[in-house]
Length: 377
Ligand code: PLP
Image (cartoon, rainbow, N blue to C red):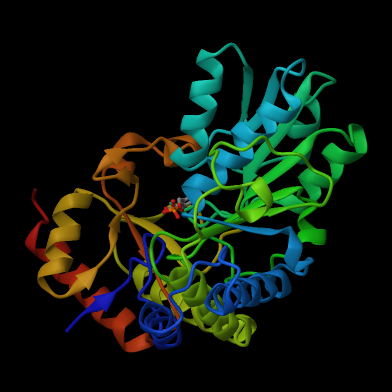
């Protein structure tokens, strides 16, 4: 038995995506840049996914460019903007809770002399629009902020933040790492007021190794990868037609059920938290303004790794609540004012449409058992 509750890390590839991928591997294997029929067929497959993603984000398909995943999309958004607009404007505003695929780009730019301002949550544990407005000035070329945090599911008011930024200075480029929100909560280009948006395939039941970037018409990005000029020169390299086909197939499916799935995720979250709150020594790490697909909790006195492996023995897969990569600690929870000993025992439970109330019940039972077993540790 497998109870997979680590969907913020990656998701199971859906059947529709598997058959789309297999179809390309076995039949439509032409190079989309080839001028013959097989190339044209491959190009059609790519353009079909472009349309599907365009529809999901409510933008023109021509604004979608395919990449190898959100890490590449984020790097392209940040270094591409800096390349195009950052010669004289040497300031960037971001948040203190970004995924490493954004924060490490910022660290690199800081080493190279850029002024990086990292906005933190305020004393209420929230991101205030004013803090972003106050941080930007005439030297700012980019504001980059995520829509949903991958560790605790916190939803930032990106639409309002970017609107206020544009009102203060329309020349500033706005980039949103939309990975954890895409196909889970409403995420439309216009509402976000974003010039650039990154998304990833493997978080939405497609394969690993594919992603996309939305780029508003007229926004320039200096390429980070030079070569054959694919994707209108924004991202050279032969497109991964099979993975792009899979991405189209999964997004097309998910688009039909976004509201229904969100309601179900809420039901799972509410059920789990209601049961959990009845136990002693449990802490819910942020339950204001968070996306129900991601729940971050600490069971006091039981370290994350111990709990994670205990649950794994029962076939339940979750993440350590503060791990960014292979257990390395990230500082996101600390940014929300959570104490180290609580962070050390945090676990992240992230659901998908495949999870059930019964599975949440089994998770609660397993936590109760763990509390008894590890009580005095
Ligand atoms: N941004 C966020 C918020 C993420 O959660 C992730 C993956 O965990 C990424 C970016 C990177 O995505 P990818 O694995 O497609 O490179």
